[in-house]
Amino acid sequence: MSKALALVAWTLIFAVGITVGAGGASAGPPPAKMAEPEDPLMEALLLIDEKYVTKPQVSQYRGMAGQGLLRIANAIGRSRVGLEDTLEEWAFRCAKRPIKKSFRKDAIRSVEAVYAALQEAMAIGKICAEGAPVPPDLVYLAVKGVASALDSQSYLIEPGKYEDIKTESQEAVTGEVGLELEDRRGALVVSDVKLGMPADGAGVRLGDRLVRVDDASVAGLSVARAEELLRGSIGSSIVLTVEREGSDAPLPFTMARQAHRFQSVKFRLMNGFVGYVRVVLFHGQTAQDLATAFERLQALNMKAMIVDLRDNSGGLLNSAIGVTENFIERGGLIVVINGRGGRRDEHRSQASAPPFTKPLVVLINQRTASSAEIMAAALRDWERAILVGTKSHGKGSVQSIYPLPGNYALRLTTAYYVTPLGKKIDSEGIEPDVVVENKDEQLAKALELLFKNAPSLQK
Image (tube, rainbow, N blue to C red; front, side, top):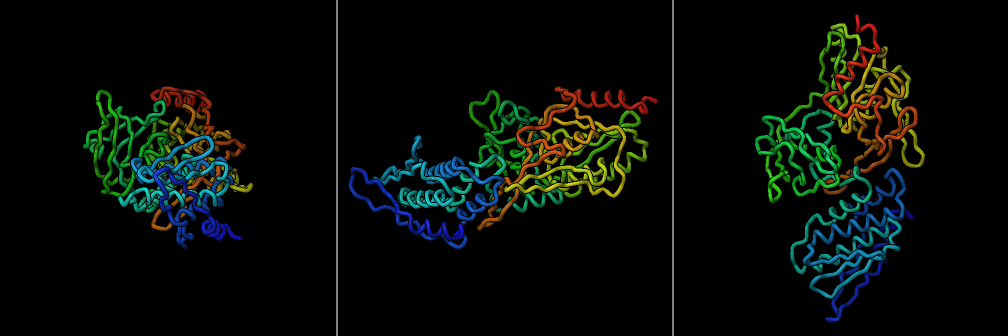
């Protein structure tokens, strides 16, 4: 029997158990209906079971059920639904009716069990609502809870966001508010407010602690994920809620995202012979932008290069590979992607021109992530560059996006990156060859190393 049919069968035979309180008998919810052909909860669970980077463990199935139940209870309203979480079970009960359903945790061992529990909880929740409006996206809130139990990079994408992501990645055009964030002991703190951008006009200040983007809490999110939430359609409205020193309550700021085209590569000549290239983000035009920078710097008799990957949160894998090919011989391994079931994909340099072989230093920091880490690791493994700065972020996983009914999509971690020498990036990060904690001193240190190790620069 296929998994889809198994889910349908499970739904049909699942018995709804209701505990009747002392107030007398009460009609329980109707039996869960057979899954519809386009059932987003079923589709999401099947995708997780079949596409997630590893086959989910029993603990993850229980985490999915627990988070789904929590989202359902919160959506119906805690004044109408109570959810008790004990070591052995979750107890889902109506606040105004003598209806209670217990979900034993030891019974949650598969996606079928997760599906049945959440379907039943939604049915009970609608009865507990006592005629009050039930969120029309209740099933998607359940999916959001399920995805949140996997890892920080797997989550539900709401309608409209998918097109924004594709546009941003391919064309590097998106709506921005003009903020940069940094992680300070788990808090997302505003580290830069760009003059003339929406956040500046709305009154956001340096040092403000971001706590919500629209209705979504940013607690526990990485800097890269939070900054992704800040981007969206040009002209679209966004509400940022911040905590500010001296304010008694959080401060909401409403603004409209402004058009911004990423300049993915910025470059200049330093000290007469050193090319400085900052790669801001890897998108569809980055490899071409770097080729332009190379051409102009070579025309100025560049004898060494500094590639600045600080604060680069990643972007397109193919773009990062295309940029890295400028420094590694054709055929050289750049990155390995390890997927489910032992799948291994190797990406090697396909460069048609000889690589840049002059002295090279790469700057990294704690906000260097994902594709930027792949580039830095490959250059270090091939001994093509000295890495200077601080340990990188450690985001070495691959995410795939799967559409769901209703113009939603599910983003899932489906693989992990491994460096040419077989080192894991995810959760590990990349240690620099030369540690320089002070950001203002990192570039100076890079220049010092180049002039020390490249006699041609001393002439």
